[in-house]
Length: 95
Image (cartoon, rainbow, N blue to C red; front, side):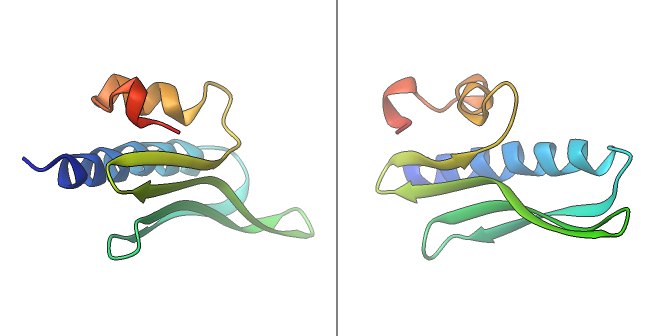
C-alpha cells in the first residue's frame, strides 16, 4: 500500500477514536472529524454548548504533506503523535 494512503487511513482512525472519546465527556457539545484527503487536512472539531457558553474548538489538526504527518495543533494530554506511532506511523514521518 502507498505510504500516503496508509497514513490517511491511520490518521482517520486515530482522529475518529479521539472524537469518539471526546463524545463521552459530560459536556453538551459534539466532536466531529473533518477529513480532506485532496488537501491533506484532518481535524477534530468540538462545537456546542458548555453551560451558557458556546464552544467551538479544534483540539487536533493534522496535515499530510507528501509522506509526512504534520501535527499542526494538539490539545490532548498524551499527544496525538503517540497514537499515530502506535498505529503504525514512523516516528521519522511525524513533524
